[in-house]
Length: 115
Length: 108
Image 1 (tube, rainbow over the protein chains, first blue to last red):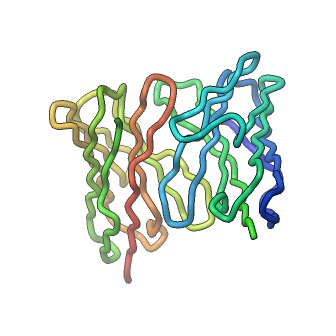
Image 2: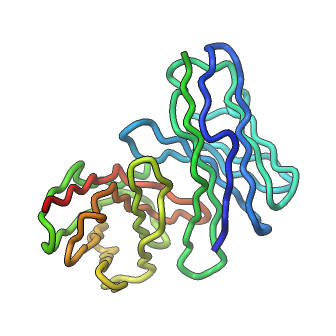
């Protein structure tokens, strides 16, 4: 299993500003995933962060809006840039376990409100 | 594109059995997983089907039929604590694609 922490747990931000969310894992992992979950909705994958290479973004998400860093095998950051109220959401990071079950472990999430 | 559809809500009473279906359209998934998410919590893994058939884990079972692009999660002996959202997720190479989610409400 993997234990994941995220900072901050929640924040209220003004439109036009940026917020950087940190994700720390207690073990070394190759890939880290960033998701967005709007209230009452499913999880949408934003991007996959690999150490030593640029993140791979899903359709509808761009690097200028959601820059990602992956400086080592246990840490990643996601920045939500130039925020608008539509960015209000829960942002979760996750990692995949090493077993055959392809189990993903999730952080507790960051609840972002943009006013 | 890839999409996984689930019923939006299911209700049941304690002790009952409930089935949550998941139908998908995709060029090909490596397997189908199920996750549970309580309000305010993070998703947690429940089960995984790499092959067609039934996988049983305690009160929860999951089924996959690749030929029908269909799977389900079966919850038996329902308890109040099972009230949560449930998501199927297709495994696409190295990432998960989550279904639309089903909110299960268990009543006494």
